[in-house]
Length: 368
Image (tube, rainbow, N blue to C red; front, side, top):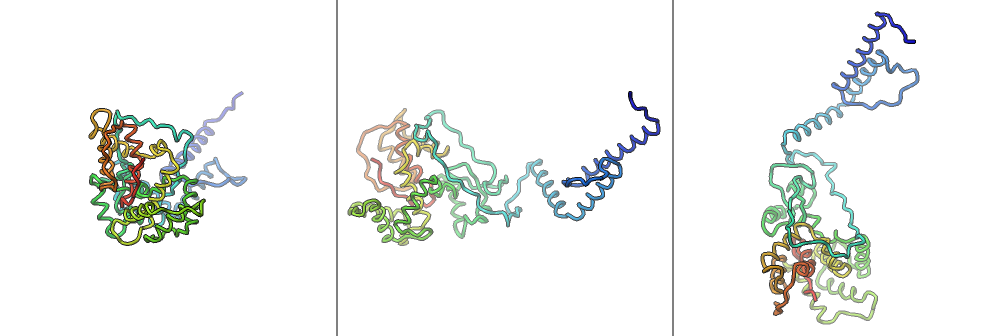
């Protein structure tokens, strides 16, 4: 049987519900949400008096937390910029306490790493740069610095605040980033970041046995001594031949193009990392390290020099020189051998990777 209510009781019940609903709506509209703790026993939650008390408590919390209001206003401004499609300049960002380099996780090799990747000559791959700065993750209408290897883009102000642009390097980046040569970001400029944890452990162990001090420059004497000690690893009677010492001297000269008499640590680390990759990884695994931009550049070079589906070995050497933007110390080939697209890519993958560092300080022996 239903419960009968008088007209007066019905009006009072409706008024109570209306007051509770209006108080709830006012709280949502005029105040930020505040997470309440557990209700105490005997609380008046669910009544009109409880609703009024809840609004009063939350108004007091709002008055005692001005930081919440400031954060709410900044969030509203960010949403308005996003809605209107307006960008924000890096100078407007205040991330003094949070502007730290992003964490880097070393890659891992997959089970099918040594299988031939599916890199066809046609159709060509589309290359699209990112729209937002990789550091501040903000879009601006101003010019960004694109990386020639990956699709990341950067603000010069963000690069300065991260410590990647110091002194005259900002002018160099400005001039290089929008040229045909291009500029490599701090990810792609360091070939050591291509090593897995196991490969990095092997390289670190070699440095420790050869008594190489990290973050220190090396002279020619240090470099040749390191080569001797690395050659004796596992065989104390083994030593470098005269030809190998000359090869080490040419490597040092390539790592020191300005003839300062020493090799900077980043250049030495990238060089040794690339040599380790060449020793431990099959060509198919190295091909998987290439980015879309690198594959497209190799494809464009092959199509420009080739006549059909093959190019000559001499044209292959010319492409190699163009990647390095300088002449390599290797004799021109008199062979009339022709190579197809997969062979061209496999034989040049190590040179494509070696062209990543901005300094270009890599010296490699011709393959074969």
